[in-house]
Length: 229
Image 1: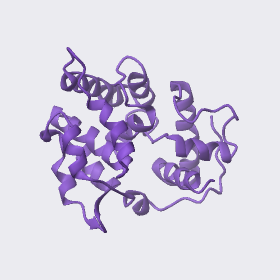
Image 2: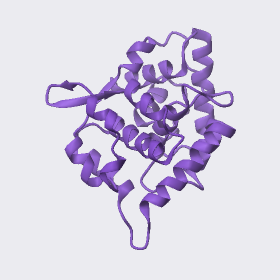
Image 3: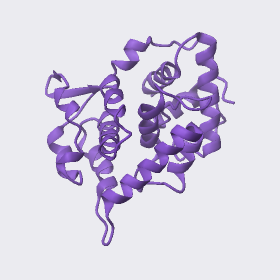
């Protein structure tokens, strides 16, 4: 298990749910299989400066409909939008997920693999869902940093098994290293299922000891990682 410092500065849950990321709808629509993949809830996000901003609460609301094909599509897009921001290069990387290959029905592939992974999440728990998206149900160009976002929004509020899903990305990984919670050879991406399980155990252990939800610990780690040089 990853051992996190007990005195880690944790945000309150309202702060976590309010974490908002800007997005550019006009750039997203052309890269999707069709416009119906766009969750209309994002069109109600408040404009802050030049861009609208989607917060975690909005994506959670979208995720509550993930028991349908359309709902799973909207969850995937909303999680990607929330995690990407407005940089063109970052959006271009996410767009690879929807790129058509000769002889491939990209929508059917995405639908089948999302359904299988979220079924695993619901029936067998977080680690099994991680294994699915990291192995048999892997979606090309959808790495752990983003598929843990999908799992997080799909299952954190209604967990199956002992662990609520939480996000693990390169920023969180840097924080784990800086806090000496993991070995120096811990990767910044491409984590195994066992490593993700260790992360879950550490996050849930601290959350239980502090009387908070696991995503408050994840948000604290992300904040710590963002402040590192």
